[in-house]
Amino acid sequence: MQNIWLKIIKDLSYNPRDLHTVPKINKKPLWFYAYSDGNFIYIDNAKEHLPSSNISGIRKLSLSEFERMYPIHKRREQGESVSKEAQKASINQVYWYSIFEFCLNN
Image (cartoon, rainbow, N blue to C red):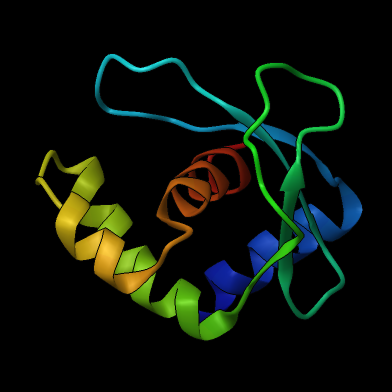
């Protein structure tokens, strides 16, 4: 799993950008800005797209949070209902799903 973390860190270090949420229900996606300093992932309000998430202060995502969220994401992609578990694992679950989608599937 370490190689997946490093791929995401590298992607967001070299290509910081607006990403949008990827809801599984009929809800309009929100945009946010994601970048990395090589150690952590940071989330902020969108820079170029609307509607933006309303994030008060920059959020810092860590390796330990990634390690909790990645297996949940994999189960979500298989169609399993994981929302309650994801909410307990991280308050940033919606951002993680987008990061996984856009940084690993390119």
